[in-house]
Amino acid sequence: KEDLDDMLFYGVLGVVLGGRLGEVLFYHPDYYFSHPLEILMIWHGGMSFHGGFLGVLVAMWLWSRQRGRRLMAVMDFIAPLVPLGYAAGRIGNFINAELPGRAADAALPWAMQWPGISYPVHPSPIYQALVDGVLLFCILWPFARKPRPLMAVSGMFSLLYGCARFFTEYFRTPDYEVHFAGLTISAGQMLSLPMIVLGIVLLIVAYRRRAT
Image (cartoon, rainbow, N blue to C red; front, side, top):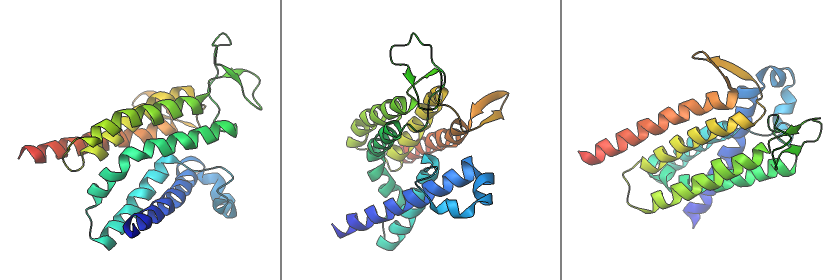
């Protein structure tokens, strides 16, 4: 119980610090560097999932060293639970009318009028809660319940989340867009590409190690 309590403390710290720094560095660096005191106001501007992911990775590395555990074993343990927390966060975004979607056809039955926007939009936080959260959990939980090589569960999470987030970003108003490989993609999609690559690498290494 003490180990789990400590792990939870480190995890929450990683989410908050990493998520906030990710929001600052990945999405609005110019603004926050001009208004540094607002970096501490996490209730203004929110947090970045990708930053939170990196923050948890660092936090779990520190906890694993302290407790003499293997980092990837710890990550495999917590990975299946992350999508549920993510889904809850996106539902909170929806309730607070945050992260509006892109313009939607008015004939779409679930198109919504969003505060401050004059045209109907996709309810993108709900899409992301369902696809990046609930659906990912429904795939990852059964996968994790069977014996898997070290890193396989973490790799599957990283791959599936990266792909799911890349898809659902098409329905969300981007913070800004970037040009990559001849394509125009959102910042969220750009940040999801390394997760896809990481997931593939972890899965390959995991199953190659088991084969030997």
